[in-house]
Length: 349
Image (cartoon, rainbow, N blue to C red; front, side, top):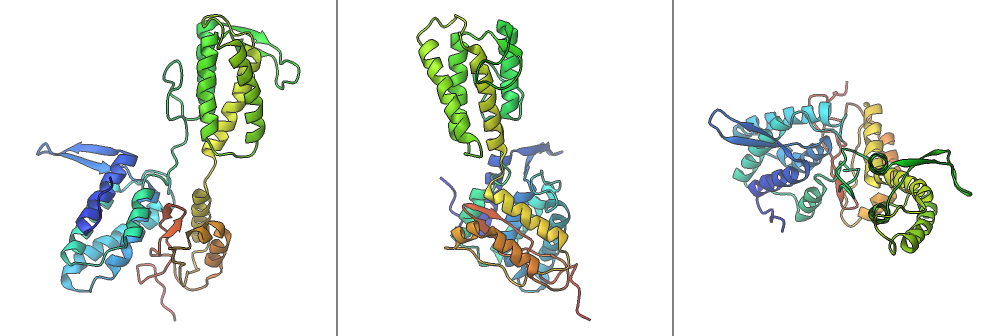
């Protein structure tokens, strides 16, 4: 059960634990033999966290006690502008500095009794951490053994080579109605084919239905009918009689799954488009951002409109601050959208 975020201290620990859980960590043992773990946040993660916290830091009264904290925060924001925005899906290179500064900022906000983001904002942020970077590729080993692969088409190739090495292979031309060319086909046993059929059927049913899915699924259904009729009721160690058709169709399934698994989500497309707008329009400023609460679905359906609004907002200076977090579905993308007084601001002449 997620921790209830009722204070800035609880907020820091909730953010840290969520990121440790979803991204992993680096571990250092100090001279005092203390184990220090730093979350391996991605650029998207640190931008999203800062997008939520930045307005509360900027709202601090300009008094002596706050200067050290706000100066460190401004330095952190400059690092995010230089390092995180340009590589949002990569591991953020200044994670140690980010988390150290974040802890000090949260402690100070707590000591000052500073107002907090709404529970809705916290929930969206906690949910999003670790989800901005899609973990594409096989999540389990499948039948036979572990293969060191990063995509489903690579897994198919690894399984193909493994079974061929274990069972041998025969060169086969494509049969009537098949596409392709003559190729070695593993002499899979009935047990092999059943295990592979069950694994790839599960993967196909769990990925997004991108272009071509229905046709692949229909042809795979016919291959599964053969497996049910010929393999499941036969001797497990006997060679499956329709290996040629099975392996060729399984190749098509693996490619379809790989493409669907790596296809960008709406959040990915919107984030990349917004980032591109910011990078290529450094002289434009956004005079306002659309706050999202009950209008989440509207934003999802009008990404192009949101991007167009950014491109058409004219002004002077650079994007130097964080704007209202943009909630896309259940995800949160922190964006550099609203100008604030900062190190890049250009004064009117």
